[in-house]
Length: 263
Ligand SMILES: *[C@@H]1O[C@H](CO)[C@@H](O)[C@H](O)[C@H]1NC(C)=O
Ligand SMILES: *[C@@H]1O[C@H](CO)[C@@H](O)[C@H](O)[C@H]1NC(C)=O
Ligand SMILES: *[C@@H]1O[C@H](CO)[C@@H](O)[C@H](O)[C@H]1NC(C)=O
Ligand SMILES: *[C@@H]1O[C@H](CO)[C@@H](O)[C@H](O)[C@H]1NC(C)=O
Ligand SMILES: *[C@@H]1O[C@H](CO)[C@@H](O)[C@H](O)[C@H]1NC(C)=O
Ligand SMILES: *[C@@H]1O[C@H](CO)[C@@H](O)[C@H](O)[C@H]1NC(C)=O
Ligand SMILES: *[C@@H]1O[C@H](CO)[C@@H](O)[C@H](O)[C@H]1NC(C)=O
Image 1 (tube, rainbow, N blue to C red):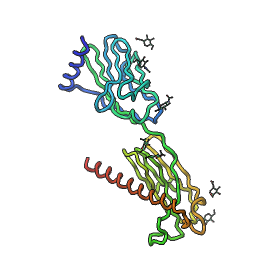
Image 2 (image 1 turned 135 degrees about the horizontal axis):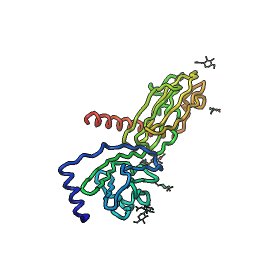
Image 3 (image 1 turned 120 degrees about the vertical axis):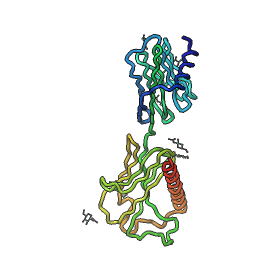
Image 4 (image 1 turned 135 degrees about the vertical axis):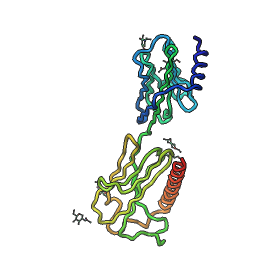
């Protein structure tokens, strides 16, 4: 049977609809390897195995009698990262990056029987440790100035996607903010009394890993006044920029929220 004919059959068969297995989801950290299993114990010499990636079903790997790997497709995204098991047809992606996230599909043709398996791979970027800074309004004489018995802290992290940032008092969750799909900068406030003896930490996490920064209160909240109003002009500007970023992040979250409610 010619290859063209096989692909024609695949196309036709899609039109009439054929059962496919339930999609399998895999989550890994960038740099890890991930293996997508065909669940075939031994492929036969005349079997055809075809792997595709992404919503456009870009052809990335194939076994057709001789083991053959296309590793330069998808704009070089998979260059030297694909391994095909010639016994099972299972595909391994080594040294993953976030660009390898997405749907994968394998079509296995054995004689005139065809089966399709779909996979969803999510590759999470490694997380940095969030930063804690003391926060003060850019105009200290304004009525928004917090009472001097209070100490306001800001935990932030730059350029993150699909993460949650949280403040904890001991093991108790105080507040959190989630960024689902955007690569953005997020910040979260914490307001403390100066005499506070509790331990606080700011935690950044995704579904499979986390990074924590423990708060050293004495570093930020001094007995006289937490907020040092003698900040330089530069610091005031930085704080203004941070406030704007917080605003942007909030809008981003709102937009996402509205969208997901519509869905
Ligand atoms: C990539 O493909 C070339 C031929 O196109 C092959 O020689 C090489 O072994 C492949 N690399 C991997 C890691 O499979
Ligand atoms: C599978 O690949 C290994 C080496 O990569 C080779 O030695 C073996 O002969 C191959 N088996 C088949 C059935 O092609
Ligand atoms: C893994 O991929 C990154 C780029 O995404 C590259 O910089 C790094 O050298 C690779 N590591 C290995 C062990 O191949
Ligand atoms: C975040 O992205 C900006 C560019 O938008 C870059 O200047 C900055 O270095 C990045 N920060 C980190 C921590 O990756
Ligand atoms: C996020 O965006 C910044 C620039 O806007 C870029 O430098 C960074 O690599 C991006 N991070 C991810 C994980 O996409
Ligand atoms: C903080 O701890 C000290 C002793 O460790 C205690 O004397 C003080 O009352 C505590 N303050 C608060 C506000 O709990
Ligand atoms: C907390 O911060 C103070 C003031 O910067 C410093 O002297 C102290 O060593 C810090 N403690 C810890 C545990 O880092």
